[in-house]
Amino acid sequence: MPMRQLLLLRHAKSSWDAKGVSDQDRPLSPRGRRAAALMRGAMLDLGLAPDIVLVSPARRTRETLEALQPWDEAPLIEPTAKLYLATAPQLLEVLREMPETARSVLLIGHNPGLHDLSLRLVGGRDAPARTPASDRARTRLADGYPTGALAEFGIAGSWAQLDTGSGQLIRFLRPRDLPQDGSGAPEA
Image 1 (cartoon, rainbow, N blue to C red):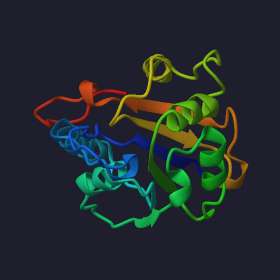
Image 2: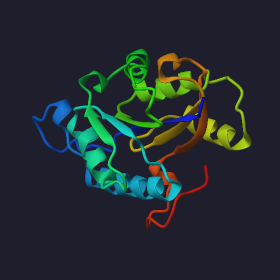
Image 3: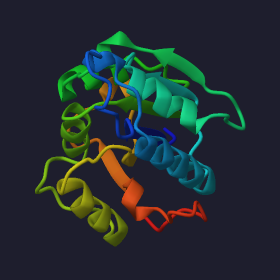
Image 4: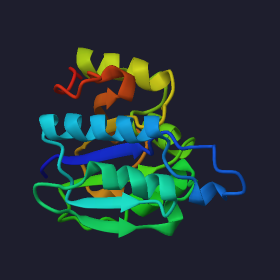
């Protein structure tokens, strides 16, 4: 079975300036917009192009998605209400429903669910890393999952079998790891 790709992107930094706005309606801050644009550049440089994008209905996740567009080949975009503030088990449930024909899935969501899911996919905080690059990425991942961060996993099995320890962490990129002038992607 070919290796699948799972991309987990936490929405970029949102704005807390608008008073009386519900959590679901908070927009991105200017810093968040810049970070999302930097992540778009890194994704393009790394050739990270999903077949399917699952996005929470929150405004900050939708605006993060908008900053990643346009794609060279437009993915299927699925706004998914279940992703809003979802836990790791809820995120797993959604991902297990992906069609087996999907080679690459990008999920744009929220913490703490994304961080918990990422740690679960690699087998927990203390599971051994498979390569030196994944060891460096795992160290950064264990430190937290800041806004705008992207985790890339290789998935050997089917989407339906996605579970604890079934993901190989390939890279973990945080906005602060990216060249601030948008000139290329950093190493894993």
